[in-house]
Length: 390
Image (tube, rainbow, N blue to C red; front, top):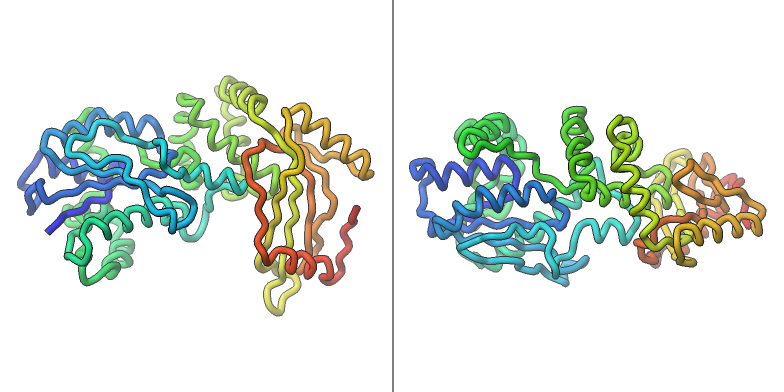
């Protein structure tokens, strides 16, 4: 029976692998039956990939363990997955590789940031689904053991996971069986490798900032790796330009958190130079907000239309926006970093609409669903629609 380990590159699954590879008594199977599979999102910290290459891949190669790296091939499931590497002698951790569809590519194309609450859709789409697709092709209708790195204090997650994929998928949770918490994993890896293993995550992951501990850990990583910080900052800048209510920190902005650090000067200067080098655009952004059934004070589903109007340098686009504001009899609203012209503002009641022209890096694509125009008309004709039009 195949043993398939979902290797997320973090300390939990690293501790499992390290113990299995160095302590044969800790496992019940031969390493020839083990397949280690990693789903690459394209946005993992380089530091994590480097540690995997230095410490884990040499061990896997020494024991001839089949090691596979997969990723999404495109935005739709019908695009399938791409196998980045499939070998018994792994060398490179392909955290960013040609041919893979990156999570950041998707988020930038729609001018948004990762969801910071509820179901982690980005993890399901860029990790869970590629893993499931590869495993399905690997085992077919055969039974297999699926190893998950849930910690000893994550029994609730285990209970939710256990019924999935039965009867052919047989789940296994070594850390829970061993009674190991995250602290135990960190100590074990440190004792064996002499390395404090960092938390695996995308460089723009909002969950890294959900707690004070995470912020204290992540901001120094940004300051030490400024070029990796550019991705999250650029993504947030674009998203906030399109919707001022967005931000990587559950509506609050990563930029403001970095600014508050006294050592952030070089990173922020680098970010400004990075923005200057990007192509820029004026976007026409319309948003239609429905009402929840029976409650005109509660917002329901929101529909958005995004259209790129003109491209140029940052300076050219800002000049275009100022000229458009003058011709329309409006003013440019700015906080010093974002510049937008409001053509309609939402009101107190739903359904309603809002409409802006905004300047931002030209990284997003035009996008409007078929249902948008109907929602837009409903918002225009909503109760007490007091917003101005041009």
